[in-house]
Image 1: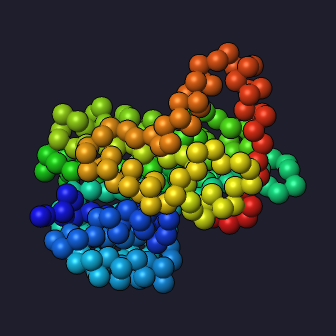
Image 2: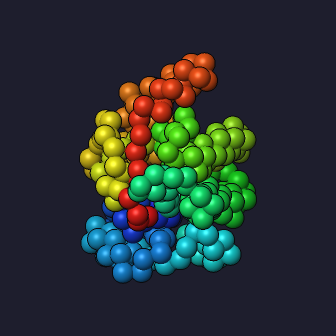
Amino acid sequence: MSPPFPNLAITGASRGLGAALALRAAAPGARMLLLARSEAALAAVCAACRARGAEAQAAALDVRDAPALAHALLDFDARHPLDLLVANAGVTGGTPEGGGLEGWESASRVLSVNLLGAVAAVEPVLPRMVARGRGRIGLVASVAALRGLPDSPAYCASKAGLRAYGESLRARLGPEGVGVTVLQPGFFESDMSARFDAPQMGRLGLDRAADLAWRALVRGRGRATFPWALGAALQALDLLPAPLADWAVRRYRFTIRPGE
């Protein structure tokens, strides 16, 4: 049986959800470009994918380096026309330990990686996908896109922007034969969640989160939110009058321990 996406690329593929998706895509006949900053971690994921029969190529780079990112993706696409691109690379930020405001340095970093880094990955390959009349874009947003939280304004903004970008692209590209899946995970087992100092409602295991994300991509869903109950709760908050919704989210306070 041929893989659902014979040619694919994943950013942020060295760990967490990106690495787990790469392993689910790895199969005989699959050709993969895995991108992340850590060369050593990428090499390990590539080796695991090759052990499953895939052809895996690594590109160690930062998604904020838009020219290098475009070059790597277009070079791969010229040899193996992409069936799937997953923009997964992301970092977190928010209230520092000890309180205080997020600040420009943290906010600009989060926005440049989570939002602009995803756009930098998608835009170079879109004209080729449209010309071929096929392909799928996967954007890893977050349930944080559904309602701004007072302790992580830039992170929520980056994911809300990515969600809106994906929704816009899906409506525009559908008639062109190019699909877009917006993934909106909540808490799941990851380095990012480990630095989140607060109760993690509905937290999933990494394998479960990756299974749900991969299934949504393979089935061509327009969006997937998991766990569903957390997403529904945040959407419901956004329907309340602003003072009441703000009061509710202020009751859920957290800090982000240093890291990425």
